[in-house]
Length: 313
Image (cartoon, one colour):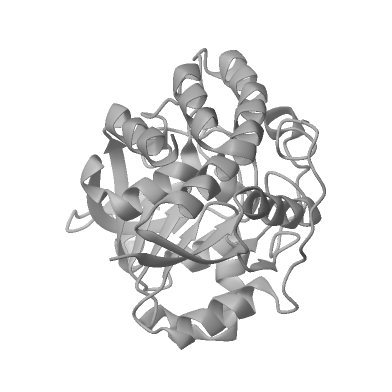
């Protein structure tokens, strides 16, 4: 049985890999993509989402969303990681389609209301679109099947500050709203994604099986790989966003715990996700007053990579 999803994304090299999975996997029904700034500006994110669907020969609805954080100033896009065009600065073909007339938050609200209890939201960028959807219609917390967020860190530390992961840091106020909204939510953060390394041989297999889309995945991967060699000393990349889809289909590949999430929205810890395990007592109750969610604490990295490659090759 296929799982209907909306994929909220800021493509992004690892987003592109994940979008390829969402387009290819027989158990995923990609209802649409909603775009946000993050790895790139919002116009580039929308362009890339449209392009990746077209390269796969599929016409997937794309709704444009958040262009900036809810409260804090917007930081420049990390062109040194994803390239100025989000896909490693490679030459890209023209896009034929265009985004929907409605906004990303409205698309989320309309789609969830049309199929109550059926739709999963998989969010792999800053969380402004989900926060705005909650503002438009708070009742979607009772109608969505589940929410899977690629972001945050429980014990791993941060990747853009000593304690903060990029998606949460980019819009901590939106993250604080989304992670405590009371819907069935799983956080797939750096504790899990850093256990997974997509090696050059893996990308070779993916490129061979994905045609025109495979060329874009492989050439953008080369740029991303160079960053990882410099930043973490690994030969490959962590396919962060693909891990969110791996959890959707293969949750047994992840080690999880129940608990309460809070997000620091200012100060030196801005963007940090603070996880209080369910049932554990602390000196004050404030860390345990948000709804209980699921957090990934680790992953079977080789098994996740095998799943990614088998889906795409």
